[in-house]
Image (tube, rainbow, N blue to C red):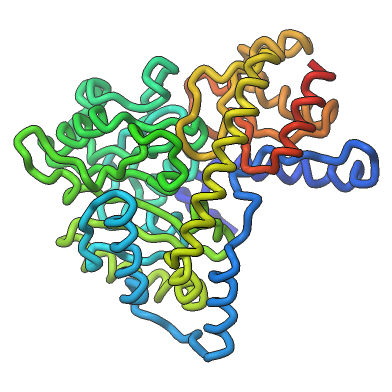
Length: 407
C-alpha cells in the first residue's frame, strides 16, 4: 500500500525507540539488585492530586461524559483565565482560550490554521522534535537555527532577523525548552516578538513547562509582552499550554492554546472537524486543578522538582557529564557526554553514533535509560544526552552512584 509523502517525511520519535529498548532490558533485570532506572521520558512521577481524581470519578458517576463545545467547557476556560491572573497578573479573555486534546492537538491546530504549503518556520536547534513535525504535517518547512550555550540554547532576535526570508511565516519557540530546560529572557522574547510582528509573521510559543519555572526572571508568559511603543504584543502571540507537566495529567490528554481573538473562529472550525472536542471527563477533572488545595500541592511538587535539579545537575558536572546551562524550568538536564564517550572508546564526533551509542552503553553498563541528542536537531546532537529529573530523589541518588561506578 503506497504511503503518503507526508507520512514518509516524519522521522521516528527516537525518544520512544530508546524507551522500547530500555523496556525490554528492564524486564530482563527487573529481579536483580540493579533494576532499570528510567531517566529518559519527560513525564512527572506524580499523578493527578486527589481532588482532580475525585472530580473525574464524579463526572463519570453523574453522566457528564457527552461532547462539549469544540473549544471546551466555558467554566474551564474561565478557570484557566483566572489562573493567568493569579499566577502571572495577566488578564486573558476566556474567549481566546481553546481547550484541546493535549498540547499536541493545540500545536496541530495552530499550524493548520496559520501555515500554508511552502511556508517556513524558524525554530531553535536543539528543540522538541514533534514541533517540527507539526509544521511538516501542515506542508510547511522547519528552518532549524543552531544555538549555543552562551545564548541558553534559545533563538535571539538577531538570528530571527538574519534568517527571515520571503517564505518565512514566523517562529515556533519553547520556553522553558525541551530538551534543555532553559527559557528565553523576557527582554529577548520581546525583541523576537517585535521583530516577527513588524514583518507580519506569527509567534508560536510552547509554554507547557512554564508552571515549573524556578526563576522569577524567566517564569513569565509571553502573553504579557509589551512592544517598544507600548503596544500589547501578547495579543498577537499564540501560546500553547498543557495539563500534562505542571498539573501532572499526562495521560489525560488535555491542553489549551491562547490565540488572538480574530484567529479563534478558524481554530474552532478545525477543532470541530478534527477532534469534535477534548475529553469531557478530563475537562471536568481539570476544573479541580484550580482549587486552593490542588494549587498548593502543585507548588509543593514544584519545590521538589527544584530540589532534584539542585542535587542532580551538580553531580553530573562532577562526573564529567557537563550541563553547560543550568535549567531554569522543566525537569531536564542537557549534558555534554563527549568526555564520557572518550573514556568508553566511543566517537563523540560521529553524527550517527556519539550520544546514541553512549545511551545504549549506559543502558547496559549501569541500567540507566537516558535520551540521546539525535531527536532534538542537527547542531551536534551526538555530543549531548538528555536526562529527565522527573523521578524520585532516591532514584536520582541511585543513578548518580551507578554513574560514578561506570564512569
